Length: 182
Image (cartoon, rainbow, N blue to C red; front, side, top):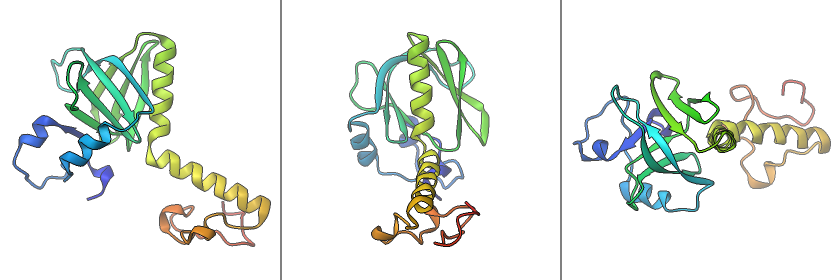
């Protein structure tokens, strides 16, 4: 199971005995709490409504740290949940709210209400850019551009140019004489 196989971590999930399921991922709670205390790309008190039917909008401190969206009760220091921002869709619902839904569970939608349209745009933009896949695509794009301009693979100096995760189109390697497939 990979990181992208899980979607939501909450205290309720933590209190359940581990039962192997497709939608559950093993994780170290202390590491996750430690990550939630790292400097955030964005943080604000937002209105948040969970995906369950009957959930109401509640004020939550929301922090974006790397590709996790942590949410806290406004008077507590430990997160009550986290969303891994992979394989999800972020959409503006109206000028001051946006939603996050995961591709394999589109009916489970988290709604966030912002104080202004500008704040909403900033959150949507930051969340989209936080995913591993977005960063990977940018790395491949810039790697290709540098190779096209210089004839050299910039990842070669780090010894990682052959790693599958940095390849274009399911493992095609970047060859000095062939940039047309990129």
